[in-house]
Image (cartoon, rainbow, N blue to C red; front, side, top):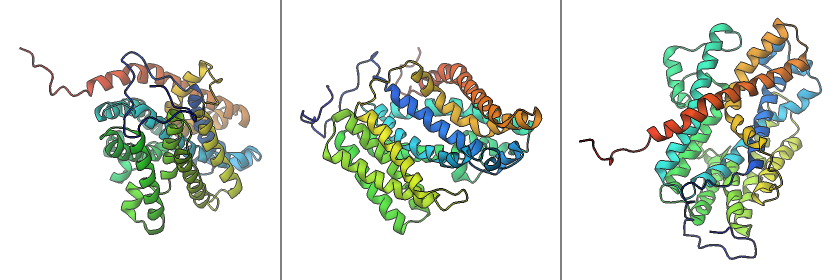
Length: 376
């Protein structure tokens, strides 16, 4: 089915678009791959030069003293997480269209867990070598981390960034149960976005632990914005999807400024709003088809490196900074550049030797064989 343009009527809203024929993969949006790496590098810059804490020990002083100018921009790198969530809403809607629930579940497990398990092993190993950077955990805590359910179980996190994975998993669960299970359609996605936004608003004013757990008022606007932007991409712009995008953007601005501008590192609320706006605008440009010119093959590699890079860059990066800067005496800027390069190289190794071979195998192994013919 051809994508509708603003001058064409939309397909019936209650009809699911048929999946692509076997052997014909969905066209890849290369610009979106590049945006994913940009978001990961934003978070990386924040962890290396925009915050204090453990990284200060690696630099032997607070990053604001090491990078007095860079750190003023790096403090906003944490908003790369919100950028990720907008992209995630877009990608999950795109990848689930025309798929049954089983395929959706298998694709998410095969995408998330192989690299995650390797990152856990690497960071745990580093904790034995340099506990000052990475605190070791007990065996039971490590095993719970393998499930990605350490936060609801109250276990320490091996990977500092994995709190965002717990947010993503809850989004996947909501979307799978309410949209993918009955079948993804335009109408169901719109209804899901509308109800989730309303629940997030109500949860902000009269929420509790269960509301925060299920509705996620602080992060719901970003996922909803990404979902609505995919509707724009697939069916063409219209008042309804663009209206959902606009509402989610407004609520996202409020969530970001309320949560960040008055925290430990000084942040200008107008800069926070600008960064969030640019994140929405970047994904909107992809949705509107304005980035078709960005068809460079290396963007595929950039997208492939994003997830493993995100997993390993924090604690292992602090480890590398400590070795290069404090151990070998390398100046700050070369240390920063080499550390980022080393983490990207490690991410490529994880993608090449873990994700590519084992992701498809895990997906195949998870297929339901209950109705397979029994061997004679």
